[in-house]
Amino acid sequence: MESAKVLLVEDDESLCQVVTDFFEMLGYQITKAQDGAAFYQHIQQQVFDIILLDLNLPDTDGLELLQSLRAKQQVLLYVVSGRQDEASRLRAYELGADDFIAKPFSARELELKVRNALQRQKSFAQPLEAENQPVMQTDFHGWQLMADTRSIRYQQGEQVSLTRGEYELLLMLVNAHGAVVTRDTLLSHLEKVADIYSAETITALVYRLRRKFAQKGLNSPIKTLSGVGYRLEVL
Image 1 (cartoon, rainbow, N blue to C red):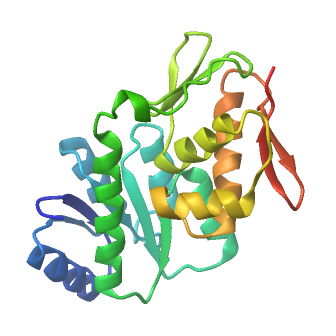
Image 2 (cartoon, rainbow, N blue to C red):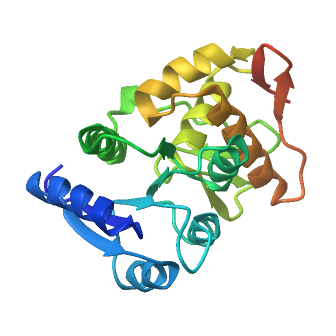
């Protein structure tokens, strides 16, 4: 995607150069950071369209950077790491990673993933025709799902931002009006609209949504049907 701004956080110089050369050849603007200190400096100085984040950095754990970033920004972020254990993957998703790409990887495949994600984000940001507006649900425990700002709020209070995956999953549950939505149905939809391809990511998204509901000291209306899927409890 031409002129998209990418922050590449990677301490492997040869890999960093390969990715940089390939992406710049296709018109991306690449900013490189080889450690956590450079990461913080760059995100304070400019806004990026997507961040590609390694976990094993010389001065910090990339998961700490992810957690710090998500407290302030909802920018697209892909973890790109040789750390492939399940605990690291799940923790990355819980903290708000949009995807987890294991090393080694193809630069071409990575670019296609980035391009598709940015195109979907751009499409999502476009004003929707009135007849295509998502259902605005205001009666599940006082919560309102805000399509224009991709957020939720409780009883006209402060808005809580959602990632693209969180929003799309919650929207499906809202539109089901209390009916059960199977994990397979959720995954099939999220593959198309949010670049989510694994069942473990669904689990992490639900976990994160429940934490955001809990920010107001309230129980989550998302109910789990073991082995089946999820439903939204409605009043």
